Length: 94
Image 1 (tube, one colour):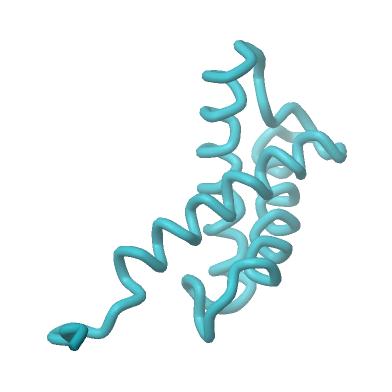
Image 2 (image 1 turned 30 degrees about the vertical axis):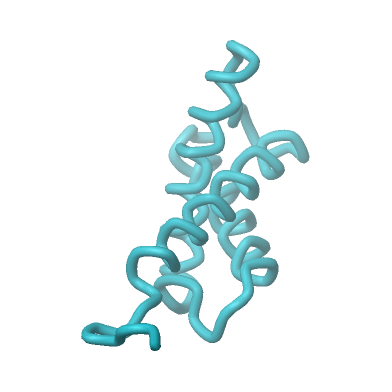
């Protein structure tokens, strides 16, 4: 199986699951394409975190470990996304 196809499948699964977990009306870009982007970015973030902590490659194929690493990275990405983009422009807390 092509490495790009693996990243797309793992990213789509991880992005979909992360959007179910992260609270909020719209936690990131919408639709299947949004889930795919969130998941692939999450796989990159999760792989980087995994490599920094354990010194090994995080996303290696379509398996539970890779999906878990990408899922955790996607959650981190969505939380950062919501912190930066989630506030309305000009809104000031009272």
